[in-house]
Length: 216
Image (cartoon, rainbow, N blue to C red; front, top):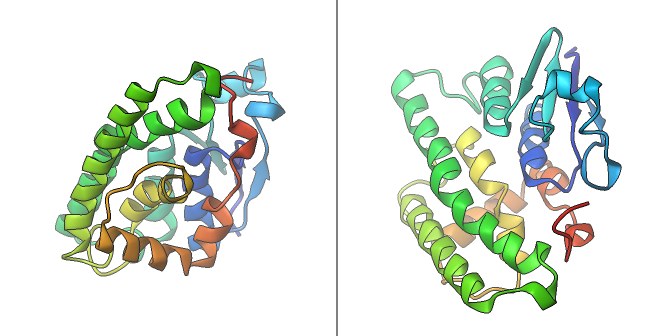
């Protein structure tokens, strides 16, 4: 039985990536709410584990790990080799390619939309900046759509950690009041994700508490 603890508020998209991976792998874990309305992320005890004071942080036995993509990669390799993490190096390289692309490109688009449209109070919103961010996000999702026209999941025929890090954005993207480019392959992939109990539990979490709040 895994001795795993995850710290972080469940309405954090980065925490959701880690929770989704844990649920897909069927691992036992303890979840400790932290940051946001819970606070606790600036205590000396927490900063000793994660000097950034951000979430998530994962402890597995003696290992303490932060950064959501590092956590998801670790869990996939440690507990999902051959499933979430392909064994052949060439296949894993494709998974890493899309995982890194999510961090450098996809998140720069949809997260900016979320901050400008959801987290920013309505009286402070900038419609021009929102439109610009939505266009950037639509461009990134169009790249995913072209990939998903070739394969049912981001890196091939089965779910991998590339789907986890990129798919964690989809619930928010599909429920925000924005003009989304019709992308049939992306939408079909999202429907496949929604069929997964682990996805629904980890990712389909209300973000209403965050609306109009730039900080806690």
